[in-house]
Length: 84
Image (tube, rainbow, N blue to C red; front, side):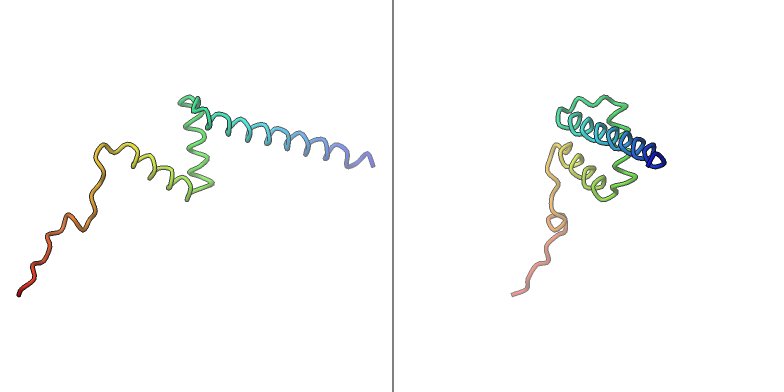
């Protein structure tokens, strides 16, 4: 019985630390109080382990930073005139 007790303690410690860091990340993101270093670390994590959500986040940021809405590609092409 004493052989597996240290493993349970170590596993419980790591689970508690991971849970605390997850909670901390949520609080920081919700408040927007992440400093440059924390924001960069979270962005690096997103890019490495959640590639699709990182790409979506970058697209949302790009859309928010635009001053003038981007036009449709169809508007940029000249329309073909119909012959009657």
